[in-house]
Image (cartoon, rainbow over all chains, first blue to last red):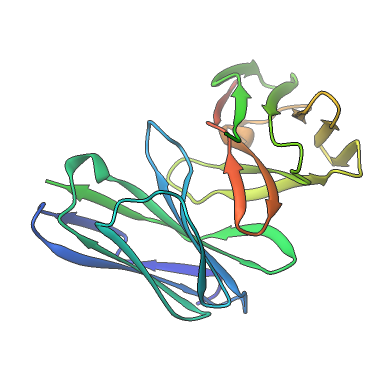
Length: 112
Length: 111
């Protein structure tokens, strides 16, 4: 499969659960991103990894924990989430020096 | 802080007419201005972009204009078609990790 993939595509979790979102890019890029998309804030940048190091953390609550084990994979670990965290979580990648964002299909998260 | 304002939030135009969406920003260090299109249920995709050393760029029916002095840039879609119906996002960027998106414009094309 080409491009940027995300799993799962849909996730329902309770506030006490722990789950992880996975993103994989097959484009040879060296930067990866997590975005939150909701009705209130359509495209909100959460984390940025460049060459597997976190370079940006936009004041995201600690209940969201990113992990980038290599340049092709990005995870978002979730624990003790709140109902307001329900949203579409989009992963993206780019190549250093080229700013274009290549988005994945997203994970629709519902916190009950 | 740095932000970008996008207007209008919704836009409805007759098929064949033109659509214009405008974004204003405050970060004078931004040097890259992309526009993304997100169709219903799909991922955002880049449709056109412009860098700070260029005032206008055109690609078939879409064009982007940039006024760095006034800190605003606009997306122009001519001869609109039903497949242009989507949400459009502008963004400003000054580094790979420094990107801010506008709030989006929902464009509807009336047949």
